[in-house]
Image 1 (cartoon, rainbow, N blue to C red):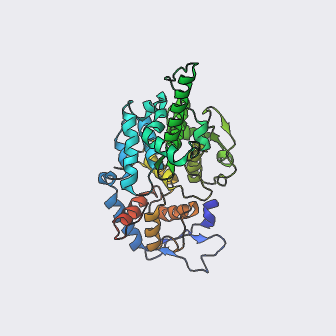
Image 2 (cartoon, one colour):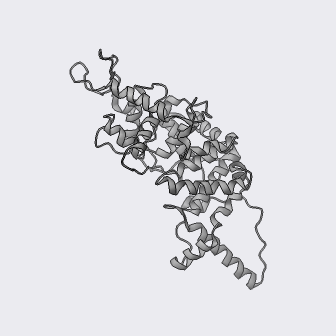
Image 3 (spheres, rainbow, N blue to C red):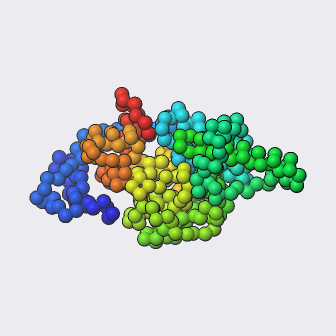
Length: 374
């Protein structure tokens, strides 16, 4: 996908407008060259400055970046918040907060995950689990493969007696836990799905120390042609196995390689979507949080990666405002190809930091008269 089949036109318009890219195989000398009007570029710069402030995080999932102090806590909290940041804010923000309220009882996300205390998260509501069993008549549905294969280390397993009464009580208790786990946590994600995600983070912390170290090693160790074929095995963070065949095409650019390395670390986890053409908005947002520097919002924790290699998080607001401004064609879909195209457009304005445009387009979309979902 070399530069999306497009190339730079190496000259500037006399009017000061920024030249857009021309499709490969066409000749700028004979075809009309589309331009990003200077007026549009100036408006985007002004909007970015207006919205990229500390206040941006108020009521935004990025507020979690300020909740913790240590690198491991910030990374884990940010990733959990990012993968749940879809739909309406008044619905997903309380769900995110409930996870960290539980984690903070155990000393924060890192300690909660490394200790295995997260394993009880799927049984937080026995009443919900009981209701699910009564209505469904079975507790076996709703668990995904990643959830069933991921096991949490626990030190409080009860010894079961040999008499029938104790065995019956134990079976009932186990069934209640399964029912609670299959209950929905948020939208189409169950408590079991969430526990599986926590188990994967536990494995990563055990092997790599931090999530950032894990992604860095996957990014730096794997050649470009192999990056998409590696992932952390769901039963052992110490092995790498071929990824499922439904993975994306092999990454061709540093930006794709960075995104695919993050996807690879969570291959098989239902909470981390990895469609062939998905724009991966939530993962791109997480990477923006970790990599962009000198920002009142983003952390810049991953100094080993470059902001120029980020892909813009393509949500509804960003897509719609980009179309209105002529940065994308009217029928552009929410795909990775579209996200890469828009990122390249924004590089004409911010060559080393294209995701600064995310603040301009997202902020403008949120403030627009129409109300859109993320």
